[in-house]
Length: 144
Image (spheres, rainbow, N blue to C red):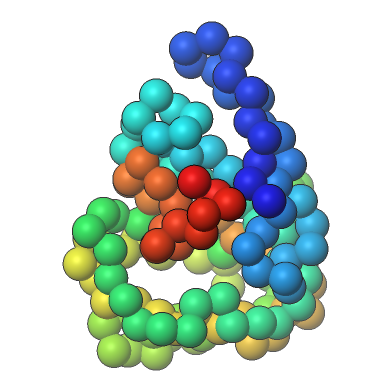
């Protein structure tokens, strides 16, 4: 289920807990979408806590907006402590990510699959788009 965010005036949004569209992500997540929460801003963010391996994105695709992805260790006091592996294909090159990472995908960049192969310690996954909605397209109806 989408997060039930509450607007506190024009500039502040109280973040509510949402549920991921992925059954493997069981912890509540947060999200803020430009269209829904941020007065139409070209910015959206999803924040998830990963505890198990799974295929997050199965297909190769591209967006007509920029995307930035962070994959971090779960400890807020030491996010560079990382014990896992994600395989991510970008422009037909398979990358093995075994370290905390920031991934910039300019609009039009082919990417995917994204497979979290090993999650020995929990990870934080942050998906930012310079777009009014999330990177998951089409957006599932319950998230619109």
